[in-house]
Length: 232
Image (cartoon, rainbow, N blue to C red):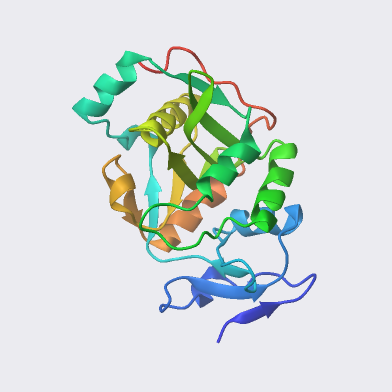
């Protein structure tokens, strides 16, 4: 059994999450800014299908990337050095979310509903959610979005409409976060795509301990700007 959240209810401790399905902790509640921030502070995130109750998750182990462990393949390095793209940050947050939620070949429906777009756009409006965008010839061809608290970044989703576009966005993000002193990037659940970039699984207890320290570090919220010398 999992807890049903009513207004004002606190989240259960993450150790109460189910093993199967891995990490399911609670249901109900809402996607208000205070509720989302409370979730992220405790290593919890929402993930549910449109029309279903809100489901809250904290899987064990947790997929993370430590910025210093970023891996850039030889082919990706060549792509980055071509510089035939423009990197923008926080200029099209809603468009990035909608692109992440668009149907994909070989995949089912999306969990990025209009409700989720509205909720994270509210976080973006408060300078706590950010998008990294890849543009070519004035067209948005790839990107990602996530939430930042202190010096902890929680990656949510990414998309590509051109080869390696999401990877280009991710590399720029990681390099900038490392420069700013961010200690960890949450990747939520294991994927082969993120593993090739250096992400790895760690125990949930280690993840929660690490984020508890990182979210207390100072970091100025607001619209981000990336440095121009991230790619050598």
